[in-house]
Image (cartoon, rainbow, N blue to C red; front, side, top):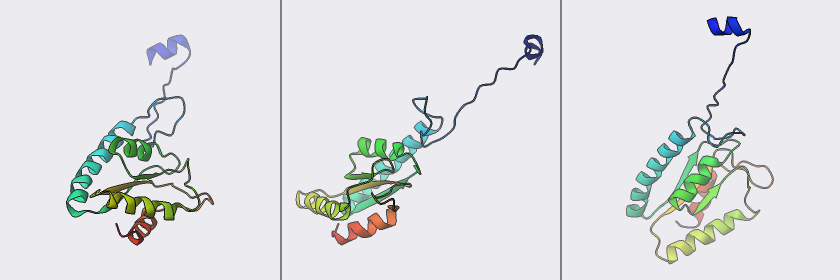
Length: 142
């Protein structure tokens, strides 16, 4: 504090803490890396269960306005489908999703992983919830 009195001003530094990685001007906000690490641990655990039970798993992650965590998780784990707020899916995404899940099963895949950011929306601005994606995927028989 003595330095501030001598110089006549006080320097302040702000540190952004947002696990969504939704702040411009920085490569990664504080909390993003640890959130991503934890999500990947969960996906690894789910993958083992999904393979043994031959199921489709829908995982909802943080990301109300920014789908960074969902997108990076999807890329890292090889998810079958990723829903993010920045890029709404085409209008008939439900039919396409069911078709792809069925094709995957016919090719012998024992599991499917779908990642949904909490703020995912369709082209009309309607929310895409993980419960809705689960209901849609159930109609495909996966």
